[in-house]
Image 1 (cartoon, rainbow, N blue to C red):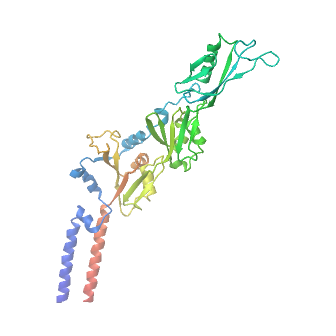
Image 2 (image 1 turned 180 degrees about the horizontal axis):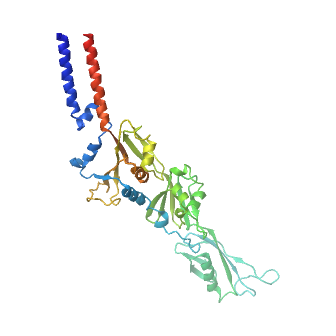
Image 3 (image 1 turned 45 degrees about the horizontal axis):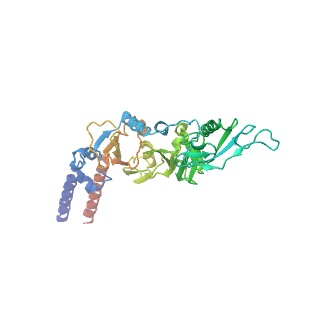
Amino acid sequence: MSIKRFKIVEILKKNLFLLMVIFSLNSCAKFNEFFGSAGPNHGQVHDISKDPRLKAVQFVKVDGDIANNLLARRKQNQFSEDFVNKVKSGYVLGAGDVIGVTLWEATPAMLFTTSDSNGEGGHATSFPDQMISSEGRINIPFVGSLYIAAKTPQQVETLIVSALKDRANQPQVMVKVVANNTASVTVVGEVNTSTRVPLTSKGERLLDAVATAGGVRQPVDKITIQFSRGNRLQNISLSTIINNPDQNIVLQPGDVITAVIEPLAFTILGAVDKNQEVHYESVGISLAQALARSGGLDDKRADSRAVFVFRYEDPKALNWVKKPTLTSQGKVPVVYQVDMNDPANFFVAQNFPIADKDLIYVSDASSVQLQKFTTMLFQSLYIMKTFAAMN
């Protein structure tokens, strides 16, 4: 053997030994650092709890019960359950409303001039329109101040007749609402015309108010309705309200309806067709839909057992095995794992709800690193063989 060939063989042996050392590091992070990786492998994610920096993280293997519990919790917030959903008996007057009062007195009139030109019968006497005072009162001639706040127009009619029955001859009264300034709701946000919608005894519902405001300016599936009543605030997608008539609740004075575009999105990384941030509709999507929108798992790279969802979860979302440590925002850092190698979990993935700002990660299969190693090995051998042939 020539000196040159001897040197080449020695170089080859040294490189093979080096490559074997590298291959022995396959189970540790240094192997990933050397060959490159989309992120931690299956085992490294499971070892999160061993990292002192991540002791607060909860690791949860998702099954049908966990997915159903999370889905049911998302559906708990319902307008029909959290807000009174009944039509009131009639329109109730309040301070600031403007009303008109018309009075009839039978012939012969005792108090008001009600005779017609022939001196027979009677006609109406209309009083000037007046606004109900901040104290809830109006003034009626020969009666004085009357408290009418929180009464219906019909109740006010009865009250005036009762006050005049010993003074006027068979009085009859009609009260008309000229300006409804108190019994109204406010509609703002992504609607064509922000407006105040007056309420009547009909019992207007939420979608009535949205329609009165000219409808929404964006596609329905992108709109979330933020509903405020008193000190309570709740959000539901407009699609949910349209598709579930029970959520089209009866409105009450003072309600505020805000149509908003809620920027919901999740991030997906790892062994998928495309690493990206994906925006989704306010009605929500499942894990199965999220994976599909990202092009699905890369069958040449993905470890289908290791589909992980990283999330800051509500402490009340699940019955934790150990008491969770909360973040400064009062959340629990959780890693959910779904084994997509199990056919039963295709049903689980359809029920597992994705939350805003979730991070979905699919780790590489172990064979990917082995493939990288063997590719580099054969490339090295080819280069050395070529070099030897040249010499």
